[in-house]
Length: 371
Image (tube, rainbow, N blue to C red; front, side, top):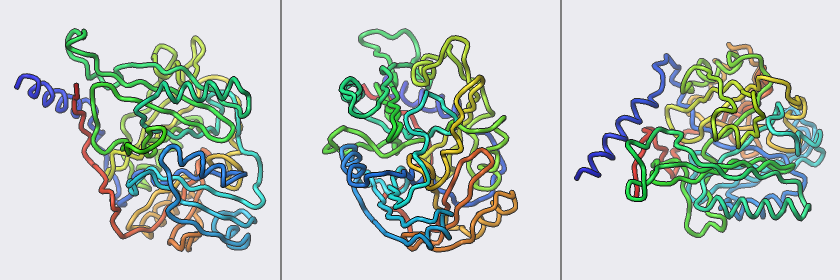
């Protein structure tokens, strides 16, 4: 009974500690981040690669260069593949964009925290297996990968009292994999569970979940550039912008921080889904700026999507924020949508969707201890 009581106390305490700021937000019905959109040279390889992470194709479509120009501003024939991890269809999907005439190579393999970099995050049940796979691939030199060694920390403050063999530590272990083709962050939980945040099917080869959250290294002088995420899209800021630096174990390792280095950080989350979070970083120091290669039509992660049942309302709000959205029109999957790029170089597609997801999003963040 005491153990169960402790669980309840920790959940309540954590909910209070991490409760979102009281914000006046438009009720846009916006989802958690729906899709990562990845420009690729070889869609067959991309589909095979992500299949080992549990993603399978659930839809595909091809449009002409004329139509792609209207939708995305890219005069190139486009074949798109929508991939879903297991049964999770409310967030964390992948869209592969196979441009017949890509606009460029994208950011590619670049120094850590290169401005313009995008990273997708997944939960795993075996982080050291993944580290070993990418480390071996790096040594073979067939594709450029930079894996960081996994590191653990109590990032949620879940450990109460002295921890030992019997009162075991509650931790998360994480690492990053930087590559030319894609950038990953993986995390593994020890001693706790968050319902609705990272679902892993037992038959997934690499024991990985849908994309749970997403990192953006942005081209901006302050986080004010991202404030429209709240005022136009209806996302909640988790806190005011804060400075993270080399004194924090996780960021130091994952972002390969040199002594004395730091960055601004701010996170956003949908009020309609605890998953599909966004994390934005502005380096506080000299970093390579390749944000011009982050445009739609280049290779790599160049675009992300949300969906909402209030598409016209969101389009009006984005227009009022002078973010110059395209007209509402059918995308390649025959979905009403529009596209815009913000002042920090981040591009979005907002999709109109009224039908409920098969997977019901979780809206209450809870930390449950497990032995």
